[in-house]
Amino acid sequence: MKKKIWLGIAALIVIGISFGLYNMSSPKKPVIADSTDSALQFEVTRENLAKTIDVKGKSSYLNETIVYAPYDADVVSWHVKDGMQIKKGTTLFSLDRTKINNEISQLEAQLEKSALEARLNDLQANTADMGADLALNEAEAKRGFAEREKNKIMNDLNQVNDQINQTELNAKKKKLLQSEFKTSKPGIFLFDDANNIPKAVRENDRIGKVVDLDKLQLVTFVGEQDVFQIKTGMPVKVKINALKDIVLDGKVESVSKFAKTGTEQNTTAQAAQFQVNISLSKNENLIAGLSLTGSIEVANKPNVLVIPTIAIQREKDQYYVNLKTATGVEKKYIKIGLETSDKTEVTEGLKEKDTVILQ
Image 1 (cartoon, rainbow, N blue to C red):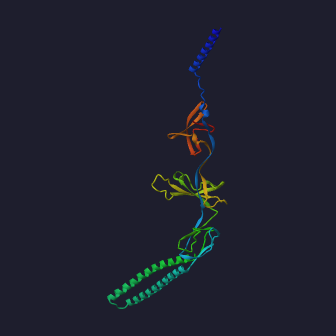
Image 2 (image 1 turned 60 degrees about the horizontal axis):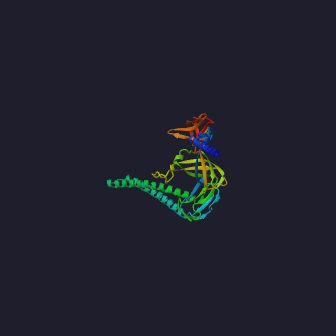
Image 3 (image 1 turned 120 degrees about the vertical axis):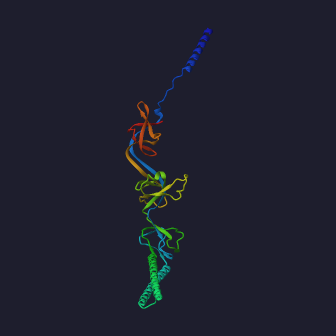
């Protein structure tokens, strides 16, 4: 009996080992998942596509009237303070007139002297002409002729000097009218150096400026890749960095045709920068000197076919996508239009609601 039991156990062991060896020699085929299920899929859609260029810069006054000293003089008095609101025609300062009045008097005296000398020369010339009618020897006649020619030349020179002196006199009289210096624009007056208000000025010294608080601009710089895309009149959305919720409307006013000073060097390490000025809509929170961020809309196409830019692949000079079809995935060549970092316009090769795959 025991012998039969042991034989049964041995048989079960042999069967188990045989079954295990069979499974090892004939493994099950692995289940292959559909690769399209795990890949990123994007639907071709129709929408408005806009391309923008982001810029950063500072706010500054759009309209500034620089104030220069009209002539050399001591400042008798200042009638304004730094940051003062002024109207058109407000007197900013009064200059001493003593020095310029003396200069005007000297020029007037020179002109009067020149006029008297001209009358004297004319009288001498008339006297010489009368003497020429008398019988003179040849030597006296030559001397008389030379004297008359000399007087003519002197008169011509005096006339030239008189013109120069008269021009200078008119200019000084015009400057004298600015001794009570009045502004030609309304706004806020700002000294160039409010901590060092001048007591004396020299002609054409810069004293300060009158700014229009209602009109400010964003001054920014762009690279050579962007400058040719930006045109005057393009709309801009501007944010104040310190006030994220405030969005200002702006417009490109000017695009520099010359690189910023210091970037014209013959070096590949430093890219050229071009100044762009953007006018800003009025806002009570907007003042000069704020850090701003703007988005310039350089292109806008309504109702076009678009797909995510990352789904487009390039092969030499051609573009293609992996198009999902009923039978699998097809390599589909396409033509593109407007490109942005996020989406790209498809002009040929796809239709709305097609699905492309990023493998």
